[in-house]
Length: 256
Image (cartoon, rainbow, N blue to C red; front, side):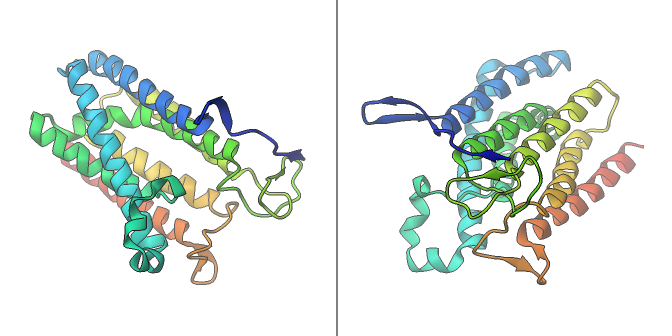
């Protein structure tokens, strides 16, 4: 068993703190930028590096807005109804992956419409580095000692500073899940697949893997259990799995 005593702050520069979590976000975007350039060239997609930078800006804005609004509306609606200006206090925490995904899809679609790119052509390659960026984000969650799992006595259990008992390091389970997704997506990238297949495979894999990991993750306190057994995270990710599977069937059938 392991006692978590990692300092989440990498450097203190006067009043400025550089945290591992923020650094991982920056590294994730850099990985995405350079890997997108490489994959676009490899697949002969005509997109400039300036356009890739613009795409990532759209994605970053959509991710931030979507993740915050979804969290406020779904996870803590009552609190933010009483204090609506608190929605802008993102430094207090409270972001949702599902909202981030919706925000990224929306902002990416707007970018593609504006720049006249095919949405699926870009979506099918951006999910590859996105999987790595998500992995880094979950490692950042582990270093922060947040989003930990349920109480357990497995040999690799972790005692987090603000949690009772020893817990599943569910952040590392999720990081491993994202690494597996990256390996699968990168491995099939060169195959002759229908447009949109890679993107919806990403959605389907994330939904199925996250559904299983939720059995080991501490439920969100605002929502607790859905139907007294499943967490809201499992409800949302199961919906992702179903919709992603349907869309894989649809794009495959359309290409046949």
